[in-house]
Image 1 (cartoon, rainbow, N blue to C red):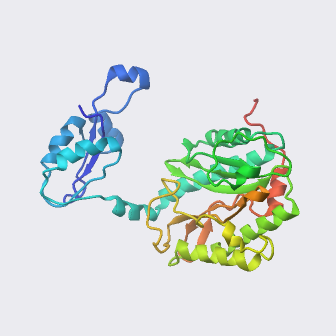
Image 2 (cartoon, rainbow, N blue to C red):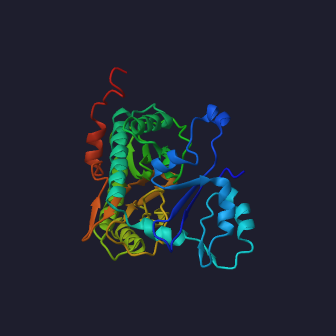
Image 3 (tube, rainbow, N blue to C red):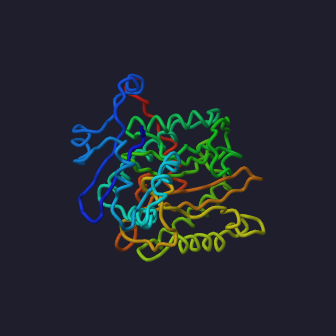
Length: 354
């Protein structure tokens, strides 16, 4: 008996949708809780009138009418069954993934609402982390404060494993072990995102563990911030992430002076400038696609100097508008003076009466 679920759209007949669900297993539900099965309850809750048992799916698929069949294979466990069912099909079989990716690039009003809330939750929790950050804390303690903030504000989960990397770990792009004890003089890169309504935020800030940037840290930070602002100024429909990347790198090299010794600072900017954002933190879509109103991207330049144990990344979530952009994460300070001032604020109680 099939234990997979399937959603089928009959494109020639708009509105013809079928959902196939495994039959309920009362014994299993005693361990894992109740689930939806085929029948009227699932139809009422999903709005799909035809909710059928999953074991009906193979036969229905085998008898599907001719023409192009669009099949999303999904989880690898589906592969073998689909291969058998489609082996003798005469018509073409295509993947809808490229089409769906293009549809996901432009967000509607409800998607933007969910992203806004995910960003608000992330910014609030990160700012609370700054208030309690002090030398002697471990990275995992700071991570715990931030993720507690996510849950407190209604996020279902993290959008991706939180990155809290201090000192030498600040130069490791996707460091996620969070075991180091933080010290005065360290920078800590906090790259985190709450997920709300299945949409993920993705914000990065780099802050000084002792509450104050050193002169060299500040100079490098301001270079990264300037590169970010130069790229932001060019965000508008018609441009591409590749063009914005060139703007940020050019700014970095023209304004670095001797900050990176005899090398251009862009040599230490070792990743792309940004990515699509939505249901996945690195959302689907062709990165050569020109920006259009309703798309959401990240802008995140960085500089990483392992020999100095200095990593700096600043990342914000950006909604493309008809004539420019909206900085969705603009409520969270970016400028060094504002970051230091926010870190000096008194922490609030983690929970009333706690």
